[in-house]
Amino acid sequence: MSGSHGVAVGFYGVKKLFTKERSRLTALENVTLEAEENELTCIVGPSGCGKSTLLNLVAGLSPVDAGRVEFRGRPVTSVNTDIGYITQDSNLLPWFTVLENIQLPLDIRNVGKTAADRRSLARKWIAQVGLEGFERHYPHQLSGGMQKRVSIARTLVYDPDVILMDEPFGPLDAITRMVLHNLLLKLWQERQKTIIFVTHDLTEAITLGDRVVVMTKRPGTVKAVLSVGIERPRDAFSLSETPEYAAIHRQFWELMRSEVIETDEGP
Amino acid sequence: MTKQADDTLHIETVQRPALFRIARLGSGLSEQTILIVGRIMLILAILAFWQLADNRLVPDFVISNPVHVAARLAHDLQLGTIWHDIAVTSEELVMGYALGAVVGIVFGLLLGLNRIARGIFEPVLSAMNAIPKVALAPLFLIAMGLGPGSKIAIAAMMVALLMFYNTLGGMLVAPRPLIDVLRVIGARRGIIVRKIMLPFLSTYIIAGLKSSVPLAIVGVIVGEFIGASAGIGFYIRDATDLFDSAGLFSGVCILVAMTLLGNWLVQLLERRLLRWQR
Image 1 (cartoon, rainbow over the protein chains, first blue to last red):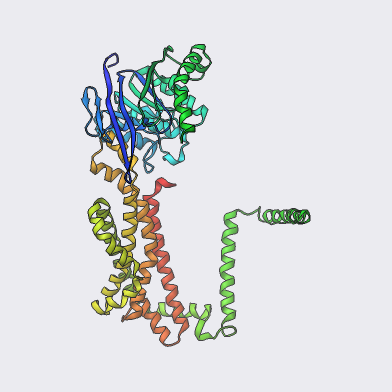
Image 2 (tube, rainbow over the protein chains, first blue to last red; image 1 turned 90 degrees about the horizontal axis):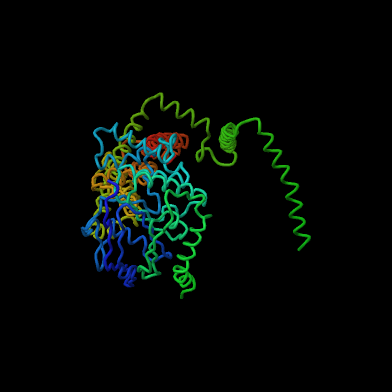
C-alpha cells in the first residue's frame, strides 16, 4: 500500500465564487496544485484565503466554478467517499457515545463481518488515540482535545487512503496541540497516508508537512510550494529548537509575511 | 463621593458575616434537605394564610378554604360521580394531545423536507397561529356538538400548531456540517434521517411535548366550559353556577394532578430520549 506514487489530488485552474445576496466573492482564483500520494501536504495561508474551500472541493461537497479538481486522476463530480475528512469543528454526533461515534463509519460502510468485529476495531482505535476508559462518554463530557482525538479516530478507523484535515487543532491550547501533533506524526509514520492539512499556522505546517503550499490572501491562489527538508521521524516538542527548523521558518515567513500584513492592514 | 463609597464598603463588611452565619447555621444539613423543608413550609404558610383569610379578608363563597376543599374533594371522590368526569376529561386530553402531536410532527417534518411546500403553507399557518386559539373554541362546539369530539378537536388544534412549529424550527436549523461529515463517510438519506435528523429533532419535539401538556388541558377545559354534559371543566362550571367555591377548587386540584401526571410522563420520555444531553 505505501510506496505507491503519483498525484493523489490535483487542482487545475480552479476558480470558486461565493454568491451572497447579489454580491459576489471570488474565494479561489486559478489554483493549480498537486498533492502527492503518501505525502503530508500542508496548505498555509491567511484567514479567508479559501483554504477550507479547497478541501470542500476535494470532498465533493461543493462544485468548482471553473477548472477542475481531480482525485486520483478522475474529476470530482459528487460527494467523494474515498477520502476521510477531519473538519475544523469535531462534528461528533452529540447523541452518540465515543464508541458509537467511532463505530458509526464502520456500520455505514459495512466494514468487517459482524457488529462485534466493528466494535473491536473501534475499540482498537480508541486505544490508539489514548481514550481508553472514555468509551461510554458523550462528546459534551470530553475536553476539546479529547473530542479532536475522537474525530481523528472516527476518520482513521475506516482506513481511507487520503485524509483531509481542516485546521483540526486550531482552537486548542499550545500544549494539547503539541501532544496531538506528536500523535499525528506517530500515526503518519506508521501508515504513511496521503494527508492534506490546512492551517493558518506556519509553525504547525513545518512541524507536520513534507511540503508546504503557501496561499495568497483572497482571492486565494498558490504563491509558492516549498519542501520541508526536516528528517522524519520528528518530535513536535523539540523540533522548534533545531537550527534547520529556524532556517526553514525564516525562509517561509519571508514569503508569507506580505500576505498576512497586507490582510491585517487592508481596507 | 468618597464618603458614599466608604459607606458602601462599610455596609458590605457588616453584611457579609451575617450571610455567612446563616449559611453556617444550615451547614449541618444538605442543601437538598433545606430546599425540601423550605418548600413544605412555604406551602403550609400559603394554606394557613388561605384558611385564615377565608371569611375574614374575603367572603367564603369566593375563596372557600383548604379544609373545606379537602373535605369536598374526599367526599366527591368517595361518592364516585366525579370519577366519571375525570374519565371523560382524561380521554379527551389523551386523544387531543396524541392527535395534535402526531399531526404537528408529521406536518413539521414534511414542510421541513420540502422547501416549495413550506413556501405555500407557511403564510396560512402563520396567520392561523396568530389567532388566539381559544377564541375558535365555540366554533368547534357549533360544528361538532357537545360531546368529547369537539374538546378533542380544540386540544388537538392547539397542540398541533405548537408541535408543528417546534418540529419545523428544528428541521430548519438541521446541523449541516454533521450531515456533510456523514455524507463523506458514505451515508445515504435514510441513515442521515435516522442517525442525525431524528435524534437532533428529539430536543425540539420533547420541548414541544412539554409545553403541550398544559396547552391541551386549557383546550379541553375551555371546551367543557362552553358546553358539555360531563368532564372536570363541566364540574367546575357547575360549581361556579352554584357559587360553590369549594367545588370549584376541588376541580382545579384535579386539573393540577392531571397536569403533574402529564408532565411526569413526558419527563420519563425525555429521560429516555435525551440521555446524551446529561
